[in-house]
Amino acid sequence: MGDTVELPSGRLEVETRPGYLFIVEHGTLRNVDEVDQYAAALELLVGRTGVRRALIDSRAADAIELPPDVRDALWRWLLTARVFEQIAFVLGSEMAVVRVNMVARSHRAGICAFGAVHEAHRWLSGRQRTLSQTFSAPLGAMSQTPVPPPRAEREPRSSVPPPPPPRTKSDVYPARDASGAPMPQRASSASTGRFTALPPARAPSQPGLEQVRPTRELEPARRKKVEET
Image 1 (cartoon, rainbow, N blue to C red):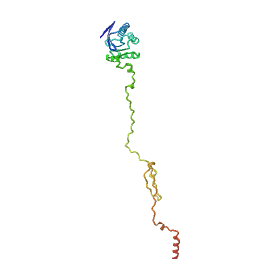
Image 2 (image 1 turned 60 degrees about the horizontal axis):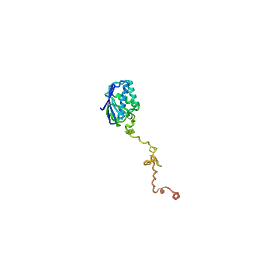
Image 3 (image 1 turned 180 degrees about the vertical axis):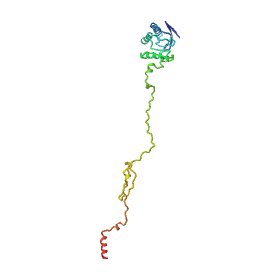
Image 4 (image 1 turned 90 degrees about the vertical axis):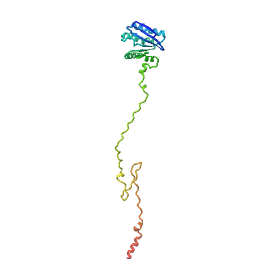
């Protein structure tokens, strides 16, 4: 490490790294006066180095809960003084990480807590999204693949054959000719679907029919022959 800053109940080990100050905390803060001394020491480091970003590793500090007034004074300095543009805390418990991030996010402060040094380093280096960006990312950005529409269900095929077509009047009562005989039927029309009767066939002419029928010209000759006999 580089410099060491002594505090009433602890010390700070400071190392200047590219882009930020790496600070390891030891001890604790017991009262509000020690918070003021802690804040003054950090402000002095910023003024001397000109570096306004810090990675503070608090895992080596005493694992005790700060008194409420000490905790409030520390947060008041972090949120109002704004000596640092960005501060990345490395804490020893997941619960502490969650609490610090909730307070920092509610005040839109450039503060973020992590559980490991490399995560804090990535955040300070700009290679990791901030906490607010992570929480405010829309759910739709997680996947751009459109959901396919549900497929229409096909009607199940039935093994029962369809019913026969209804019978027409021409099927029940076929057409008949002048003599009363049924007439032949031809295929149904594609447009109507009904049977159409064929025209009646003409009867063949009978030869010699005129000779059989008596005519008026023969009537007098027949009567004359009878009278002669």
